[in-house]
Each structure stands twice: as C-alpha cells, then as structure tokens.
Image 1 (cartoon, rainbow, N blue to C red):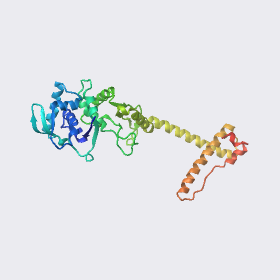
Image 2: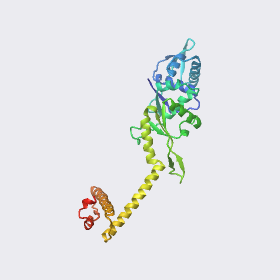
Image 3: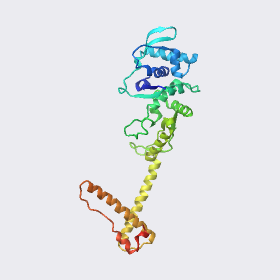
Image 4: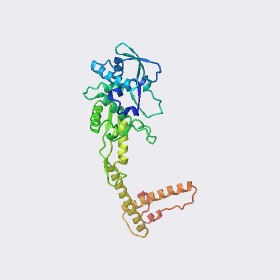
Amino acid sequence: MRDIYIVKRILEDKRLSDRAFCIWAALQPFSHNKMDLLFSIDYIGYLLYGKMPSRKESMKVQDGFDELVSSGFIKINQKIGKNEFLCDVTGLYFERGSEYFVVITSDELNTIMNLDTKTDKFQLFRYFVSLVGCFNHSSKLEEEYKGKVCGIALDNVNSLINKRTAIRYNELLEQNHIIYVFRFEDILLSKTFDNEITRIPNAYSRYKDKDICIKFAIHYQNNYGWNNLKERKTSDIANANKSRGLAQKYTALCRGKAYDLKTIKEIYEWAINWNKKQKALYDEEISKGNTPELLEKDLSIFDEYIKNKEEVA
C-alpha cells in the first residue's frame, strides 16, 4: 500500500478530465524519481485497478495517460514498443508544504476502481478525494478528530460535481464501507440572520473512523444543535427561576415566615450552594492580589427551625 499525495489545485482543475486525474494519482508516488521510468499502459492499469486491466479498462487508461502527456505533466522521452514508454514524471511532483494536498492510499484507489457499479468510477474516485480533502485539520480541533472528520455541505465539496451526483456517490461509498456519513436530525439558528434556520451539514469520515465520526457528530449536535440549546436554555431559565424563588424565601425566612420542613431543606441547600459560589469567587479575587469582601448567607437562621441541621443536609 502506497500513500498518494494529491495537490488540491489538480483535484479542482476543470481542464483535467477525471480519467487523467486518476492516472495522475496512480503515478504520483513515482514523481520524486528524477530519472526516466519505464511504464506500459498495462502497468499503469495495474497501478490503477490493482490487477491487470481489461481491454476496455486499458483504453480508458490510455485516454488519461495521453491527456497527461499532451498537458505536459508527463514527458515521453522514448517509445519502446507499442505501449511502453520511457517517461519523465517529475511534472507530477510537488514540494510538500508549498501547497495544500490530500493524502489517500493506493488501496483506496484500487477499491473504488473495482466497485461493481455502472457509475463513472473515475469521477467517483475524484469525489472521494475531494471529500477526504475536506477533513478538518484545524489546530482548534481535538487531536482525535483532526484530519479524520468533517461537517460540510455537499455544495462545498467540489464545484465540478453537482449536489445530486454527490448524494448518489455518498450512498455508493457508504454501501461499500469506504466512507461513513452521520446525518443530523437537528437544525442550526443563523448567527448572521435573525431567525434563519438551516440543517446541520452531515458529518463524514472514512468508514474505519466511524466511531470517531459518531462521537464528533454527537458532541457537535449537543453543543450547537437548536433542539439541545433550546432544552438547555429552558432548563437554565427554570433553574434561574427556582433559585430566585428560593432567595426570596430565604429572605422571608429571616424575617420570621414559617415553612414546612421540605421547603426549609430546599432553602438550606440553596444557601449552602450560594455560599460555595461566593467563596470560589472570593478565592479567585484573592489569588489576583485583590482584597474582596466575602459574602455569605447566615446559616444560623436554620437553627431556629431544625435542632440538627444534618436532618436537612
């Protein structure tokens, strides 16, 4: 299995056909060789399919190879026999770090080119590479997700492939366990336009990273999905209202109002938590060199109602 480094400008080059693109990918691992290399159409077909190509497949390989030659990516320095050539393939080389590139493997190329489908496998492979090229490498992303997953709208994967075709390609790649797609059921509220609602774009990964994709997607949905935010906001409002009510009851208790034991327990727990939060804020200010006042609720008020405060703890 060889790693194949595909430059993004090649991936998105409208002038390059899908057949030429796939031949470019098959030969790229050889591009660092500065000496002429001997290639045959059958051998290039073997690199593409992982087996000796059929006559029909060889014709497609020949088309892609001829295009790369006419485009100047490959130079034929000597023709040996009918289908053998001494070639300079350094035109496929690029210096890593100088351009954005996508890494896929020769096994992935061979797997896609051997799928039992009437779909154009040359374009299917190009779509797959485009999708992998969208995997998120952001430094802000947790390490376990980096370069393995992405959440993206199909319109943004590759401008050469329309959305309807991309949906069909996703289904085919999923069925053959090449990619995994997590389809969100939640929505997003736009941060730019008031009340604009959009669906959360699907999350993608290689099939072998399925569990990582699911974990990533659930984390994203829980933090940004509207339904979860709505539930959280509703819960926050309910907790705030309850806290406000208990604060009022504490004040009333201090003024002599009587409550049942259950209510007093709730007020007592609220006062304990309130003091803990104030102590944490106090300690933080002290660590900064400030001299704050420690605010505390008087808990002795509960002695008047409960002989042993452990009863309400």
